[in-house]
Amino acid sequence: MKRQTILVGRLGTVIVAIGLALLLVSLIPSYASTTFGGSEQVPSRTFQSLGMVPFGNLPANVTFYSGYFSILTPQQELNVKLTCNDSVNVYLLKKDLNSVFQALNSSENSHNATLLEGYLTANPEAIAWQGKLTDGTVDYTPTAIINATLIFSNPTQNTVQVQYNGKILNLLAPANKARTLSFGAIPIGFVLTLPWLIDLRRRNNNKSSQLST
Amino acid sequence: MEKGKGKPFLEVLSSALHEDYRFPILEIFAFLYVLGTFALVNIGSLGFALGSVSGEAVAFRVVTSAIGFSLFVFLILIFKNIAFGLGSDLEKGIIQTYFSYPLKRSRILSAKLVSAVGVSIALFLGIQILALFILAPGIVLPHMGVVLLTYTASLSYPLIITGVLLVMAMIFRRGALTLVIGIVLYFVLSIVSGIVTVISLATNSPLPLQILSVFSPSTIVSQYYSATISFFSTNSWAPTFSQVLLSIAASYVIAAVLFSLGYYYFSRRLNL
Image 1 (cartoon, rainbow over the protein chains, first blue to last red):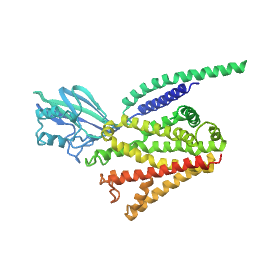
Image 2: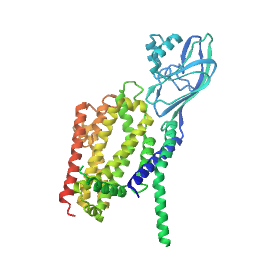
Image 3: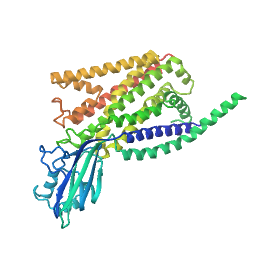
Image 4: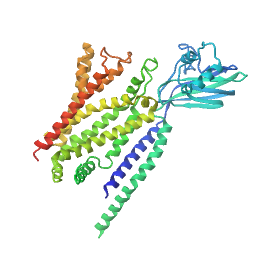
């Protein structure tokens, strides 16, 4: 058997093994470490952050205290389902709310949406996720450890009521990424292995035919 | 490389690879590396919440968290290939057959080491870096220097153990015996390292940890980055970056001396 065929074949089997391990990792279920729910009123031309409850006075059902600080790691996924009576701009920022107010040169009582939108246009790196939603889901896994703050900005003339239900899921690894990689790696590994397997089969057949004669 | 000398080297390397990684050993270890890395890595948020932790310290903690189990798997592979593999090859006379090749003894040993250690390190590092890029690219990419430093420091202790195993395999020329002594030695060294750390904490003196860092520089690297997280700092020792580099260099010098001893023994003293 050619040395290159064996080398490439074994490289293929290793890639298949890595792919299978990644697939297994992606199939290990995540579990919710934190759940939260409630509703927010977002008056016209203002923004509100989710869970504006002073730290230490958290009601039992509100445990996502992003209003002050909330840390998300790459092994966590934030999943928030939103239902609004009108569309709002939803931002997940990589900053805690105090830093946002400091950056806006604004007090905690002034929630000026125009100021916020201006700041975010000038500093797009502060945005981890953004979308204009009426009904929808915010689904985000960070690639680094971040201070996460979920903000609803209402640039319209009407007050918008936002209902939210969310959870923070703990995962071993970002399942989508691991699954995508495994779906790529397994076929590539198999293709690399194929010539080696064919050669092995041919040799086994030759051996058995020699034994029978 | 002179013309014609590469082929016998490749023959020996190919034979060594075949011996060290019979199907499906390499595949099982690759599977274990991936699964172990993801299953046991824990990017805890504790301490990061205070906002006082540097990006470098975070990167260090993520990398050490990923290394833990994989380094143990890596050591198992080294024990299998060097202590048991090389020891058995000497015991069964397989090494003597390699001497029929038109190659210097040192090159035969190089081929064995490329197979036993080189491939293991390549597999270990390849899967580790892949895992880190899947898991936390935002932490790893901006701090590649910290990542490389952490891996360099973490690999020197296993390489020192490999050097000791190499010399022991040649002295005992028995695979099983070398493996048992190697395992005992590894546990004794781990216990000694634990005791040294306790002594350092009890006496509040950095000297025991400084001595330990020469053999296991991950201690000083850990101390260097822990010092930036006052909450986690265990004692008053805050090493400088040049001390970290010096410890890593010293540990690689020890590993190089042990490997050179192995080469010397294999080339000159091994009466086969």
